[in-house]
Image 1 (cartoon, one colour):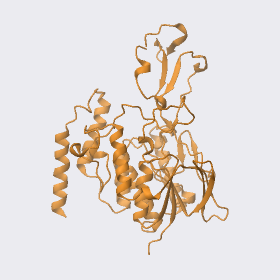
Image 2 (cartoon, helix red, strand yellow):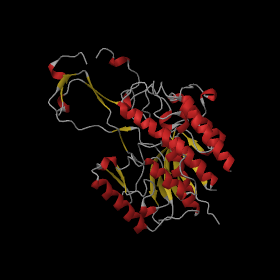
Image 3 (tube, one colour):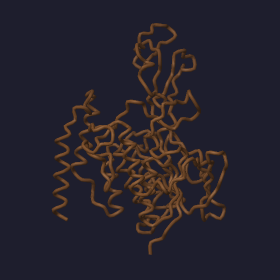
Image 4 (cartoon, one colour):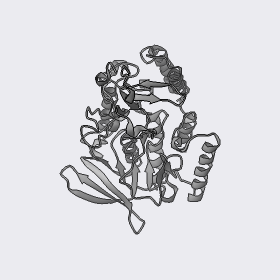
Length: 386
């Protein structure tokens, strides 16, 4: 018989929402902790920045649009709406408001909202001394603190909130402005800047070139950050490598009772979240089994050695490109699902090539009719074979 596991999910962004759904589908008892008052995570736009108040979670800027077309932004049985059924933005690469509306609808339609404790910020997670359960401590909006025990914990708090700042020699003497993309919201404050000719605002590059600038704008990514986890003996972060993690999900020493959703980057994100969640849910229920701790560790070490061999820096450990499709298909096979449809792979690669080409405005020139025809044709062919 499948086992039912009392599970805490940390975060009600896209990862936490789909994890909660998959866990519930497998018969688990699920509680989702969300420190804000709504679902959506990083897709909730907040005009505030860290300069306005401490620790703003969101990193969206006002005009942000998706990097992937809407056909790749949905889940397997809950597709992203087409242009004619759009919520607020029918474009092929819609604005962030469209994604948030999609996620809110997903939460309502699958009953996930009833699992969420809003205004509950997780502040501590630790393994009980008897080694049997996890203690989760959270702070409520009113300042009160509560604690509850769970058999398993799924971490889905996202990784686009803590800026990764470059260490540039001489930056302590820089008199111009510095800003990370985390705190960028609107373009108006930067209008009419790069015209500065003051000597104290000179920037020198490795190739000897220099320029005068008003502002250094860091687009250097984000740090993985789990301040609530008291699990240093099982897992740590070194140069933005969260490890050891088997397939970016399970720390072998405490698998499957602690897991992570959404660690990988440079991938088709929503597909990754869903397949990871299905895997976690089925491993917890006993439908899918993991290998021994020693075997999992050996696999992780082999992966690290492979990265070192190809010269991939440690801080890119969780960057899946160019092997993202291989990873997705591996996850799919673990949960007895077919491989990713060919039309989705073709569409994904077309997007990647467009980004690499540097063509400005390709999202507005996207051939929506062509790709819509591809997806409809594939759906019709699949329906006939079933």
